[in-house]
Image 1 (cartoon, rainbow, N blue to C red):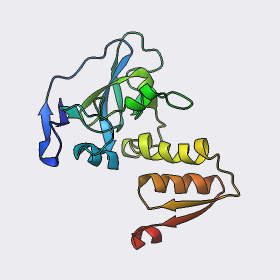
Image 2 (tube, rainbow, N blue to C red):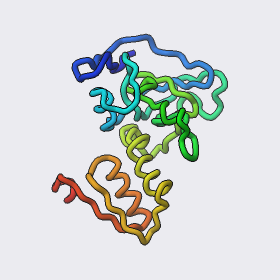
Image 3 (cartoon, helix red, strand yellow):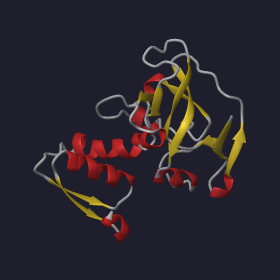
Image 4 (cartoon, rainbow, N blue to C red):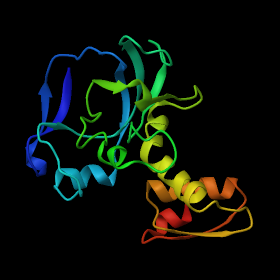
Length: 198
């Protein structure tokens, strides 16, 4: 299988590497990647500007949509054929994330998803609905969940409230959709007049 790996900081050190396809161990699933999405965090990891220690020969990326092709022993929630998305922090299952969960991120320091096949823990993947394409589903793990957590977990947005969104990147676009669907008034700022008109 092929994967994008970072040997050390810098774009020139990002290489497409051939390696054996991994096999799932206890509690793991093997996913064939259908789509990935890029996050600003990926750029920061390459530039060694992300505030966690990075291990090199690192497979980058955190957001994927794909199909489960094999499961290890002990896996009961997912099966071969399921269409899944990855979870950026696979150990963050509920509530306030623990220190351990905050350190265990796909694409640094954990191996990421910019590969043809990816091993994930069973708890690190969710089935996505059939009405989403893999490309659409791959945008959910960081951008959509970040927007949802900011609006509804940290702030408990009410329908009568006003939300100010700064910028027109992925998180802001998801926050815009979520806030409008919830009945909130939304104000958006952006350097891009074209994006504001859209």
